[in-house]
Amino acid sequence: MKKLAFLTLLGLAIVSCKDEKPAKDYLVLSGKIENLKKRNLTLTGYNFEKRIKFDRKTSSFVDTLKIDRDGYYNLIYDKNKVLTLYLSKTDDTGIVFDSKKSDVVNFEGKNAKINAYFIKRAKVYPEVFESPRKLYSLEEADFLDKVDEYKEALTELTIASDLPADFLKREVQNIDSECLRNLSLYQKNYRLLSGDNEYIVSENFPNILDELSFNETDNYMDSFSYSKLISEELQKKAKENNKEGEDYYLTYLETIQTEVTDSLIKNDLLYKRVKNDITYTENLKEYYNKFMGYSTNKTHKDEVSKDYNLLKTVAKGKPAPKFKDFVNYDGGKTSLDDLLGKGKYLYIDVWATWCGFCKREIPLLKRLEQEYHGRNIEFVSISVDKANDLEKWKETIVNREMTGVQLFSGQSHLRLPWAQNFLIKGLPKFILIDPDGNIVSSNAPFPSQGEKLIDMFDDLGI
Image 1 (cartoon, rainbow, N blue to C red):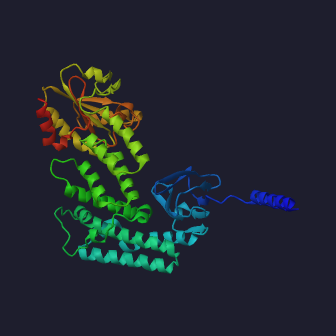
Image 2: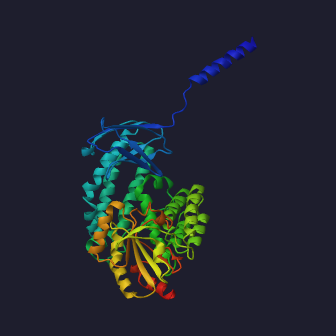
Image 3: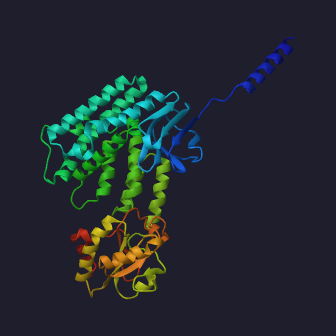
């Protein structure tokens, strides 16, 4: 009898296990957006991005999402059009609105009240400030009054919106961070708008660093204003710490290491800066070693190591990567080998017609060419415009009276294999190669850096 009772209980337990559903670990995001002609939407959050298909026939979308944390997300549904959302890991969310009237949105789901608050919140900025230009054009006292008015209006809105306590705590931090960032940008923007480049805020102006901590983990993941603010303030500190002649990129890493103790924030700031800046540093090995010592994130370290190993192949003294058959403005096609063997250094400008910073260097580059005419150096400009911009490239050369060897690659620097050997992140990029085809500098000074570039040429006997 005891055995029969045990088997009966075991059978019931098995049936019970079969009937039990697994815990839900996803949310369904769905919606209807009228008057939208896009094929895709993009949902972004802290270290998160997903493209969501949009059915233009039904003006709707639906997607199952797995997110790591409850928090703030942005649904990008058209160019420069964004809907801020609060999403929870297992709570479905529905959205209905017209893309031409995005200030009226209907939400469904547990977080509907929070998401409706975001719509009202977005209206406060233009109501109080009107526009960034008007805000930062104000005299100091009026500006500070406006920031206080804005903060008070947002605070009143949070109270009136009857928000959940856990979200309210995070949103208060978000509001504080946004107002602090407004303060931090005032001096720079006022100078720009007033034309007074010497303007300095008064002694009574709030000190941002008195109210700013670099270690608010949740705020860093939630708030664009906070993440931007601490990054900008760390850059300011790095510039203050950086002595003349030192590598700013190294100083910035050291500043993060000194000022930030939160491991998530530190790792994220280090990684994002290094992925961009490693191609610019003049002390590659030291820069890499410092990053590896400061970061505790294995995935970040592995990715940066790949970039480091690539950049080692274009370090000083290494053979320059070869390019072949770039279109020459003077006719025919030109390869790197065609330019070598003449006893001349090659000063290469990697640029594009759409690049404003590139165009600023052109007059200085032309002057440099004139000064060094007849010497043991040749000036080469390589356009990384796309193939269908060939005529635009030719027109730019004529209109700007560009000299030297003008070559057209027909590919973006982000796709051109030759450019990717140098891990080019931004334009312009200047490269100096010796007469034997070896790298002198894969990160040569710009013409606008004047004395630094001339000193390099002098040291080489150019």
